[in-house]
Image 1 (cartoon, rainbow, N blue to C red):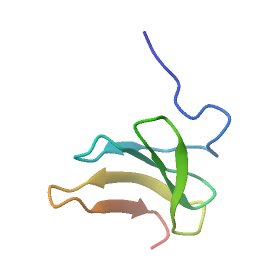
Image 2: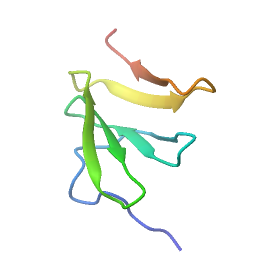
Image 3: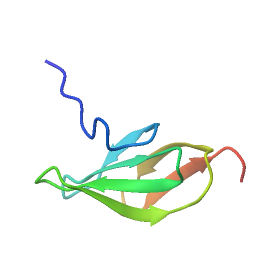
Length: 71
């Protein structure tokens, strides 16, 4: 079974990563890193700006690393 997360709430999500606490992060075309909490609520976590965010990963240290095609 496939469950769509954030349907209708995210502007072109590109990638996801899960941190140690189980929170899910995604980057969107509107320049935001969005965070989904365990209760499935979404937060505008960090504005990076620009429509060229292509991916992200969670590091072992707990950092969020973003791939931006223009930077």
